[in-house]
Length: 358
Ligand SMILES: [Zn+2]
Image (tube, rainbow, N blue to C red; front, side):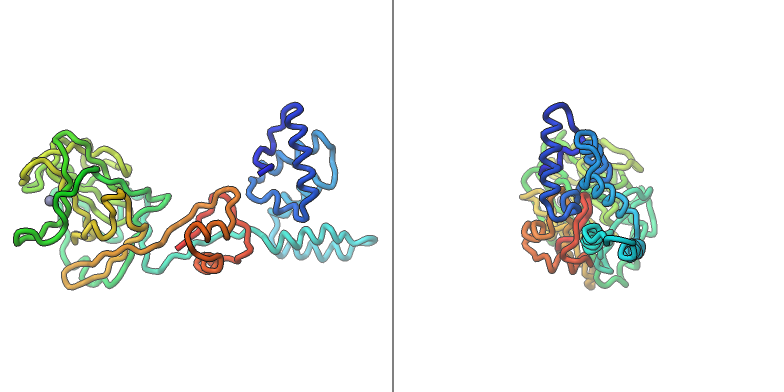
């Protein structure tokens, strides 16, 4: 787009570019369409550079108008239009038209509408997800009683987002044992093959609740995540974090081994919610090394939860994005996007804005 370089005029190149920009702006019916996506500073720079090479003209007046309109409320703008009609002499229809166009497409602040039961964690909480957990202790891997989940029905957790960070596979190797009943007893996690000294990383950002030796787990790290889950990394050879440490997703937390009750070196990896072990395979693709979806739905059963992924995805608007492009990218419609975000279909999108896309 021609406006991408606005505000960096230099020598002949700059002069040429500004001329092109001016022509394009004049050629456009709607000035505001052309400057949308630029920051106010960039628009200001564009005006200054046109002023410098061409002097004040209709274009610079329009740009100034655009910048001043943005600070006014809808009521103020309507009053302004009314006052323009009452001007003595010629009514400035062109100006009124521009303001009306601006009003019709006034950028709105998008309030992302989330499902009522969706938990979106706080990534700067000193202790993560205190909404779900009554205690924070480092001397017991699973200190929670059934009373903290028995009254739940269905809820969902936003597992990953721009604020909460993304998922990282703790160790990338072959899965040697799945979750579930095995040899007459419950296997509460999955086993991933590794060699002693191989690196193990945190699946999500959070705070280390435990980093010590504990029974059959051997040297075990347990992290409480901002998204509400707790993950367990057992049979480690060495710790690379200590209790109370804040960790990022993907941060090295230990070196693999076969400490505790373990035959051969491997990583025993658990994901729990309120102490209830979840099957990681129901929301993580170990093959693709990513989440099946951003959102995890937990439905309470007699013994705990069934977990399944649900799509609530967010798209961060980039320069040049249109609602139509975004809809196409996620296989949905502009109608649906407008509906789930509570916006008009013809609205302008601001760069950096987050849109719910599923
Ligand atoms: Zn295991």
